[in-house]
Length: 333
Ligand SMILES: CC[C@H](O)CC(=O)C(=O)O
Ligand SMILES: [Mn+2]
Figure 1 (cartoon, protein in one colour):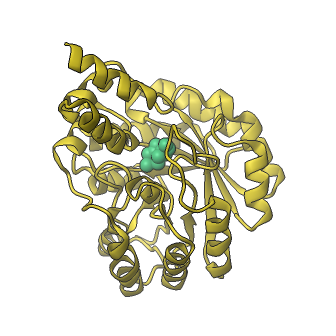
Figure 2 (cartoon, protein in one colour):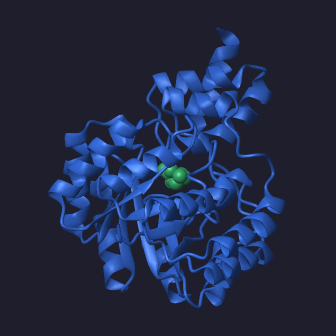
């Protein structure tokens, strides 16, 4: 098999959730240098919730994300730096600013049924000459036909890659296969896949996505990411090499940056705890985990009950305030 894959590391963006948006310039510079040396084609640097995410609602960044992006770009002599943009959180001005300091890719992320809010941002990404990607979040929440419809919208706006994003880590391999295969059958553009490991399915789901035709694949070093984290990039690269895929990545150098730069900055292990498991089981946004833990402590309730209720209510990104409302209601119940 000689299929070559585009690996995109999200440690410095999805990992931002896990470290409560506390990345420093030195940490980002060291990780970027290591990813670049290992030959990782793309890596993403932004607040966990994308450009403009630093806020009371989503968590304040310790360091302005533009400073972090700038440091990453300086180290990226081979790699290209991606930024995430959720319309409504980030603006077109934020994207222009990121492009002006050297970002080369934008991933415009929407809820899986709301691709239509991304037309302007995808258009701007293309105008700015960025590699422009559509990122359909919470892909477990809707049937295959709806994802196809939404992905077609992204493609019609100019997206060069469309991602199936398992934000809640709730999908099982056959469900990933169905989604990716349907997009592969219908779209002309490339297909990507982004996993979370809440049900311990991230690597299995990633392989299912690749076998169904995805060629842009996300991972994070030491799995640093929201919830139980993402597909672990260094493990994924080793497995893909064994399966005969070409990643162009130097495994030892990748392991070095995972062990020497990422491991020391982690604030908690990326494990499948009672509550990250519930994220996948109930289908809740992975980035809700730390907010739910805080609310559980504040109101003296079980964080698993909060997450189960959020799953029942089919909450989506942007509804972080509901986490506290649910916790408060559980106290009264
Ligand atoms: C809040 C944005 C989110 O973290 C994007 C992402 O990585 C996902 O939906 O999994
Ligand atoms: Mn994610």
